[in-house]
Image (tube, rainbow, N blue to C red):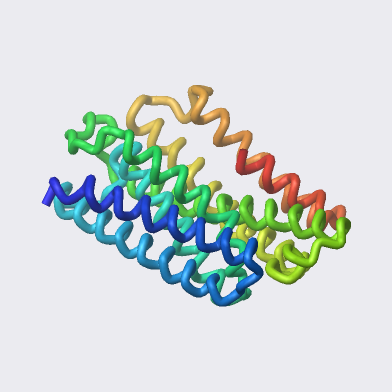
Length: 253
């Protein structure tokens, strides 16, 4: 079963690349019907992704959240699943052109990562691991989708200012893109908060200190501050549209 991982990983990567290319072709050729095929190919990639996670869980005899490879698999899983759901609800098929490059980049990185199964160091053997990493997966998955939708918003705005019919006809209304980007941040920020809190509690349990200001902790906090600022200026100042999209992109970066 372990030998199946690499072929499935390559199949997943190929499916995501194919989906991205089909989304791109649907925009270039002005053929919206191709978007349905692109969406189906993305679902095929997600199913392969799911099978990989199941295999990993069987091999580990537990939840596959122990290292960077498994986190990457879960990250792509959460991103594509969220997009599949949102795509159906808001008719965002064309946004797949902006979402799938993230899935392709992450999948391509996973091909280069060591996928061997190694025992966890004692400090990491804790139930806090599941809560901490699971919340991170959900948070970053929703933020990644918010980022992609925000990029699509800027493309849509540029197309409208240039009078380009291609992007105007394919992409949803700017108000829809803005709303979806906001909703993804609204969902993701509480999970990022859970990630920070559980990480601090876990650090105290494992190493005797809640916070040590290492780069991962520091940048996680900075990310939280950026997205908290996003919601603050949206609710209090009334930022929407272009400024909100740029702030979402900054947060994901």
